Amino acid sequence: MQSLSLTERFSDLAPNYDVILCDVWGVVHNSIVASPDAHQALSKFRAKGGAVVLITNAPRPAAEVREQLDRMGVPHHAYDSIVTSGDLTRAMIADRAGQSIFHIGPKRDLPLFAGLDAPFVPNETADYIVCTGLFHDERETPEDYRGMFGKTLARDLFLLCANPDIVVERGTQLIYCAGALAELYHAMGGKVGYTGKPHPSIYDEALRRAVTARGGVTPRGRVIAIGDSIRTDMKGAAAYGIDSIFVTDGIHAEEFGERGAPDVEAVAKALAREGVSPKAVMHRLAW
Image (cartoon, rainbow, N blue to C red; front, side):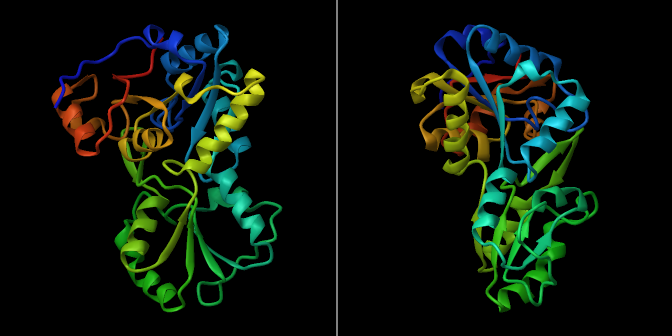
């Protein structure tokens, strides 16, 4: 295992890249407050001619994410575009127009379905399942869904996962996401489809947005992804053939000791276990 040290400033790496694909939850904000250091770093990168596409597994349309960023004070000049797993999920639902859905997830995710020909029906009569999260993510766990999934498996229903994340930060609390339910359903023998990181379709769309922002195609060697999840951000970037920066003060923070002083040996072991080698490791994204 190679020795690892923390990189303090993204500005040291910035000249090597033209496009950033930046995670949102865990890097730009923790769902409660935004990180001024992060959005200032992204703004400075853009000011020097780079493009920034925010790439998130949020199971809602990009417009909803933008409104949340606005409320948190993240300026529009910090990014060029936003791509969400919700955007890709909407496209897949549109391809199944007229088919009925059993929706698993909180009411706040209902904007995902606005304007789509996708009637909601009970579990017993649905054509397929769309999972955006747990119904009550602050008090439920995936095990609470095992009985329900037994019934849907009996009907061989396909489950479309609109957020492959297993957990996400809400302040300093970790909340289960749709990916945790999808993993359980798959383990029980169910058929599952995913949108979002680490799957390539969201990276394809992000680079299409970068073409618009920069007026031309950027070689993958000049693209870097920034994120706080080893499973989705780091492995997704590696599989797509682009460099990455791992931010430790996110969903893995408690694994690495104190949030303000991560144990670099623990970080190195965690990355090695998953077979990923990010270009740099940062406590928080900062210029």
